[in-house]
Length: 268
Image 1 (cartoon, rainbow, N blue to C red):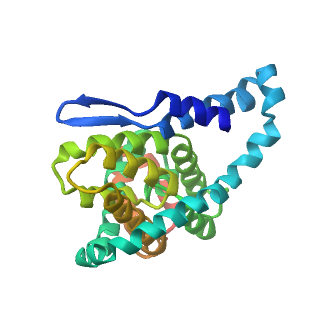
Image 2 (tube, rainbow, N blue to C red; image 1 turned 135 degrees about the vertical axis):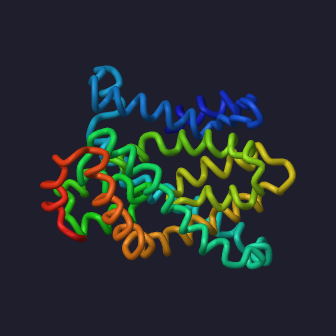
């Protein structure tokens, strides 16, 4: 870990413009890429010298420890929320209403999943970006071995591997939208500490008009609220909505052959 940090920090922050936006590559992104390369070598191709340094057992054990490692980061962000409390209150219901924006995932991802040939796996994979609360809801409602369970687990694993990189790039390039940086900071809080950190860090680097601490405090507060309200949005709004849209769109996109699948899934 120390070697990865030294290498990533030695590379530093790289910025380059693309169109009206700026892509910001942070040391965190380089560390993630290096970590993925090592994990692939250990778990995939089993490069012998590397396996002696980082065994498969160590790699598997490290995954749940990530949550513990992120706790000090969460405490740090919590200390930044306090000084910005008045500005957060001024935002009013925006923090709560922005959670409804996560439903946009359904309208974008469900048709694409159906075009790719997914059946009821599309429900689990497209109902949200599938972090821990969503994984728990889908597992409890359908079971992890169900098509919906396989779908949510697939999105969860994809987000774990690629999410930090994706949101790190998106955070820097989002300034091209012309939206208020505080609104973009709220959007960084999607319920994942690592993704939120990458997004908010690159956004605060690309934005000079608003202090870095304010950007991070808005992102951290949004991330906390997403973790609290997101579960209920998925349970009471997202799942009924995506099941309804699935029944409407699946026969139209995949043809009459999906009727049996609809009947098997039932009216959830």
